[in-house]
Image (cartoon, rainbow, N blue to C red):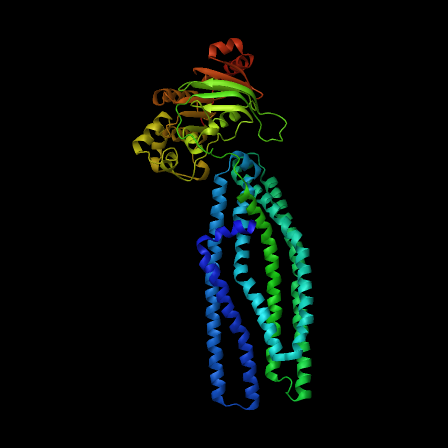
Length: 583
């Protein structure tokens, strides 16, 4: 089944995949015929043939060599085209599969592991595929043809291969078997190496801020050294291929030359002649080289088998969240209802992240959510756009259970702005159009004005055509958050969720953004998760969460009287004079 799934990725490259073995067959036949013609030529020269015959045979050999070269070049072209196309389709299949994953699926694979599977593992499978359709066809054919021609040319002398071939095969298989465990362990360690690189690059500012460069270099060095040790161990074992091959080659040459020369002298060339002896040496080399190539193919296929298994793991993974059979394609409004909702991130988890949540939010309401770290605020809003499915109970949007919606329709109707939202490499316009790919310049400017982003955008020399570097590293945290808010506004969603997404802006800018929401999207349900009371005190209702449960719901004045948690947070912030300034 795994091979069948991978074979589907050959796709439109079936023709070069089929042509390669056919071309290789022609090359192998010609290469095996050439020693036969040379042997006959040597015997004819010994018998005293004329120059014309030598020239004619020489021209035949030249043409055969050119045709063989053409076959080899054509096979290289078709094999590279087929393998590169196969790898392209395989990467596309993996990437497409990853795009269908829910957060639950993504949690199962680390991002570093997925990167390794799409790069190193695909490269290994690509190399193996090219070797299968080219070398793995050529080597057995050369082996078979050479052995047949050896018996034709050398007769009983070719029985040498009956001894040499099993010895070499057994030795090469034993070497490959010993090397495989070390090769297999390397791929898991590649994940650790990529993870170290990814963490270091993503957190470069933190690394430098805490002067941890030496620690990171040591961590990377340890991961790299682990891979080096495994590869060294494997390569040390595989290195025995060469002396074993050399022993068999030279044993074959010495035996053939000694016995062949003895037969030529003792029988005056009646049993075997100089030409046949020359051909036997050539065929012996072809046989042993074919076996050597087969051993390398065996090693490569065994290595790539582990890569193929890791790739197949991704391709076989079933999305935890899928569209229903008869989905609803339109959100009636932005009303939200949590009906006795409990949730945990995995079936094996002992503790629920949310417990017995009952909430009703009317369409168009502005709702604040307050709670400490780990209280379940972000988990709560992830269930609205069905990034996770509830463990118990139900979440309804527009009066319909979110599990009954078409996923695209549901998520198009819900816009989420996170505290650590991401900007992609490209212009500011490119990033804004993630919210609405057809947005006009005027619509983008309006959204940026409402998000308090227009002034700083126009201060850049290129304005809205300013290039954003990968991850938005050339803008501040506050600027990044405001651009992400503008992007969400362009989506004109039924529900807008701000998950602590104004934490990097000052209180005045925060207030201006919230006022813009009221004016620009009055019918949109707005859920504001915040650490600052000032960000939610004017909301229609405020939800107070603690330890995965809703402990209180009400307006600001009401909660100051009835909720101990809310009152404590308010008093701490007012006493501390909380005022976060923009980065």
